[in-house]
Image: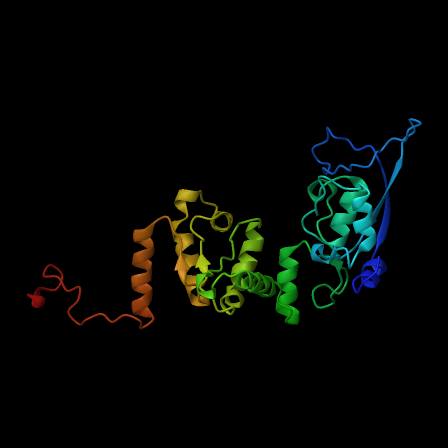
Length: 276
């Protein structure tokens, strides 16, 4: 291969030998098939050589940048069901290729990273959102806003107007209750990206984990989470009990000095006879 990306790609290349026969009946295995024959004309099993280009972007694969890959494809070498395994990091994908198992089965869900501020004694997995958020808190390398910021830039570059973008931190979406709490503690960092933030915390699992209550009994916990989100700068609320949320917002606004209560407002004859 030639081109500007070749040297970096080859420097990070890893050669992995895998048996050509994969267990198709095992649901934990990855699905990838090649048009190249896996059995030689003599009937002997062939050995597939898989070359992994760590960090090679799909848009760098072209006739100019990667002529060897282009030539192999023209010759009929093609994977008809190839795909990256999520998360798309080195150890995860290399393990999936080497073992044939997805991350949920192999247990390898991220790269290892040693940062003394996070843990002076051991490396941590980049697949652990809680550790990544802690990395941001301790070192200033905030992970979540950078990721959202990049997606915002990509959306704008694709023609989406900035005024059309609303950010959602996704409480409980692909997160444990503890991870959701960690994200909501840094909601201010999401707000700092400059777009409206949607807060959907109503009856969520993290509220149940904290209170021990079922979904329909999480009203008070929901309002506590709503109050925290508003203090951090959230703009849009999604709730189940609209009336309760409206009452909460009315009282909160008055106590914060955002809403005035007239001197005679709320005075009733049964409680305040002098108000007749």
